[in-house]
Image (spheres, rainbow, N blue to C red):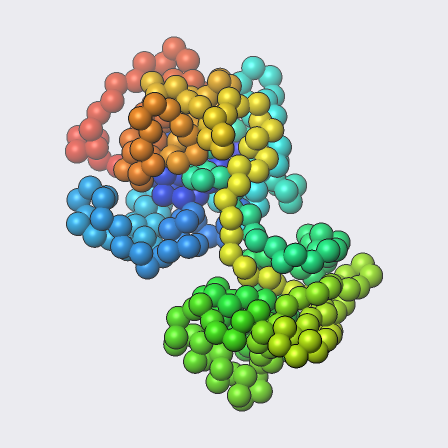
Length: 336
C-alpha cells in the first residue's frame, strides 16, 4: 500500500501546483490520474495550444506549462499512479483515508484532494456490444501505457485523430501486424502524420481500412478477432488480432466521485471558499471540479485555491501545531 500525506485525485495543472505548495509545508503528495501522463487536458487534448492568462507569461504553450509545473514539483518527490482511476474512497478511523483504484492499487492518505478538472476523462467507446468482455487485460484497451506490451503482437487501432495516427506510426515498428481502421476517408490529424500513415500503407507496413466501422468483437477468454463493415461497399471484413485499441477521444464525467458522499451541484463539488474544503472533513476540492459563488474556471484561480487548501490541510494533519508562513524569497525552496 502507498502511504502519503495528500492523495491528489487528478494530475492536471492545479493538482501539479498543489505538490509545490504542499512541499513548502513539508507534506508529501501522491497523484492519481486515469490519463497515462501528468498534465490533464493540457497534455491530452491541446498540448500545443497557447495560454495567455498565466501570470508572468505573456504566452505559454499548454505542454510547456505542464513541464514547468513538473520541474517546480520535482524537489518534493511526488508519487504518481497513472492510467488508473479511483473507484472507492473509505475513511479509516477518525482521520485517515484509503483510496482504491480500478486496478486494485491502494493509497493511504491523511488528506484527499480532488483536483479532477471537469471530472474523470473516460474513453469514448464504439457502439459495439460485448466490448466489456475483453476489457481489463483481455485484448481491448482505450489508451496505450506501455508500447512494449504489444511487441510482435497483432493490433487493430480504430480512429482518425492525432492519437490514432501517431500510435499507428510508432507501433508499425513494434507490432507484427497492424491495421488502422477509420470510419471516414479523411483524417482529423496533422497532415504530416497523415502522409506518414499513407506511406506506411503503400509500403505494406500497415493495413489501412477507410470508410469502415467496427461491427463486432469476438473470442473466448481473450479477444481473437474483430469484424468490420465498409460503409460504401457494405463488404464485411474480419481480422484476427490480439489487441483492439479504439482511440475515439475522451469525455469528462464525474465518475465514481459521485459515490463519495460529497455535496454536489450538478457535476461540481460544493466547497467552502475559506479553504476549499468539502462537507467531509479532510477532503478538499480545487480547480474546475469545484463550485462556489462567483467561481471562475481559470487555471490561475485553481492555483490560488491550491495555496489556501494546502495551508488548511497542514492544520488538519497537524492539529495544534503553530505554523508561521514565510515567503519563498526568505526561506527558499527546501526539498525533502
